[in-house]
Amino acid sequence: MDLQKYFDETKGTGVLATADSYGKVDAALYARPHVLEDGTIAFIMADRLTLHNLQSNPHAAYLFVETTGMYEGKRLFLKKISEEKNSERIKTMRRSCLCNEEKGSDGKDRYLVIFQLEKELPLIGS
Image (cartoon, rainbow, N blue to C red):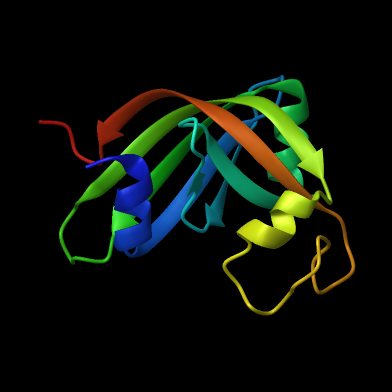
């Protein structure tokens, strides 16, 4: 199953892990990623620690646990390739109906961060 179809059809909980240039690690809950037509992976982010870490270290890992009650899901190893601030694409990609603007409902900046998929593994190795 391709990733776009997988994330469109599968419910679950995701965690995006990043580290700064010194190796100090952060992990944050994130919604399912957007899989773009070219196969890149995108997340909409607020201006918080995850975004700051990606400024000095472009590598991240996304862990997705399906809501099946079993230990099923995916691990994605990612490398940031670009970002957009308050872009029109953010407005069209938002899944939430709470905000139809590029910025969040809190009026703060939003970023579309795009990653290259470097490796995909199951949640639990075989």
